[in-house]
View 1: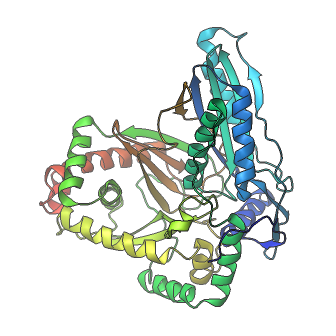
View 2: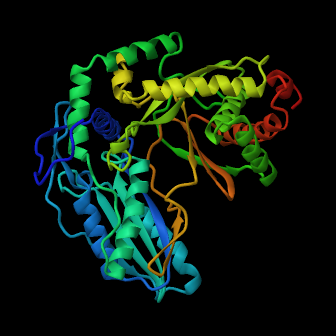
View 3: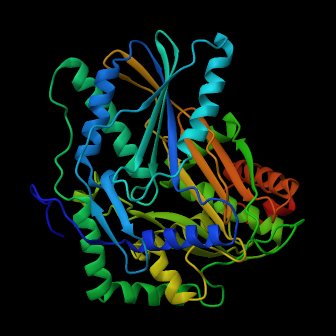
Length: 458
């Protein structure tokens, strides 16, 4: 890969494979009159203490200037479309004063307003794909909402942006240079590299062939079956959610087991989730999508770009295996999928299931993700300002799959299940979530007991 461009503004860049896929999905959803495909994802930050608004504006402006992905524009959005990197310009978040409201209503109203504000898709021709708003709740109490377009950044990119934002803010307040990593590789470099790699290197074709071998007989988009399903197709896009958490005693067992077995919470929780699907559906040959990052080289670690994809893991649940044995099998499957997942998902899907439009599934699959340490970097201090990440209720108009997102940190394990409510009844999702939390505890209590025996003991 080449090093970062020096002083030039790249024009006429190709689209990333995943960008073509997401734009095609958006066009299909809108053509089918299914609402709006919301591309944005964001977070809220409760700010307690003296907020220097000029320093915040300066930090956000520096962030936009530093990262080309935030300044991408898409004037031509077809399969052979192009994108451009626009010139940097000042960025000032919108400001709303809520102090006229009763004090006990301000925070909830700010979250409600922020959810609507941050869910608005931005103009793809405008050359600015980040939005921000500050709600004033009191003299030293504010809520900052930030959102970025998923066309150009992934979740890890958002973490990078958040970390750099508060370092830039602190530096502006303290009158010093910000301590940021050197950029040796730019968004434009990555876009060019992917196009060249997919077009000239034999490795992507070899990886896709290996995927075809692993998924033979099940396909890349294996449907999820749960008792009480309302339908087997997914074309209405009504979204349901269910929140859960692991009890403290289960979290303690998880920490100890990961330490002793030298494994990760992702592998343990994912194994238990697959067993829950097996228990609820009776199926042993299971497939699930997991996130895969292409930040496999040091110069990509701090790059803000769409570097994440998803890939299908196939696992056969053998009830005669112990949880410890099955988790090792799952770990091996995950590692190979992460290796093969360096190929963008649409490239794999179009080769193995050419009749599917990217991730738009006729029948729902399942997606599983765990964020170690939670999202948005946790609480922090920035030049006397206390910063606490806060979930903002986003506006989701459609969902393609049964999705489980878990957050693992020192305070425990929380998870959220998002599901197409036109496909799965809420009660069936609740039962799956209960099965999942129950199995995590029982497996960690008896990791050397056969899975079948643990399931029969329920």
